[in-house]
Length: 305
Image (cartoon, rainbow, N blue to C red):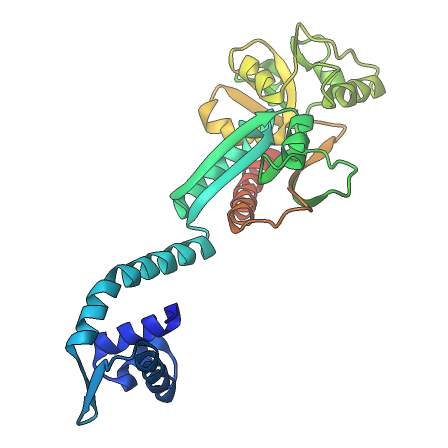
């Protein structure tokens, strides 16, 4: 006896005919009849009496069916679980992302993702880009999210969005009236600068040097979201990534303006090439793409000011 024979036997018991059982199982009626005959031969037991085109279960068949109910229930549970796994409705997802993106794009994407997959367990870990790559390489994360495309052939890289650097300033600042800010406009104003150890720090310094402007600020921070928090407290102007607009509603006392010269980076998602990419991870990337589309509308509104 095998699982398929037991499944056919159960269908016949429930429907009362080989024709109806065949429709339930999406097989031919002869296939059902042959399976039942083989099962009777194997068990050396008559399972059904044939009367007027219907199958009447024998007492032996009823006993076997009662004992097999637990198998049928387990089989349906496995089938249901497999369907939910296929549709990415259950399971576990581990995300590794850089700290700034853990404050902007990723929470917005998770809100969208969780609405579609409420039963998926999610672990979100953040750190430096080196931490993200280490997590992916060691199999500790299913998907990585970060800025700047690395030079590697060990990962599948998916570009999510172009991200511009913009100016964030306290609401009511004298420079708020300017539609675009340049390094020369910022000189002499309180600034919050990025550490030279952060990859964008030297890039911003170079932009200021091209305008013969001073880029040193009263405050120096390592992360973009930290700079925005200081701006929210009125401590100065900062050059931040445009993804900080994801939190614009939480910071109504911050005004954003485009920055020239235009400096842009990109946000990426990555999967290790040495492991299959799960449906859960692909679905999360889809949620990030949806969130990016909404962000790009906000950025266009800022550029029109």
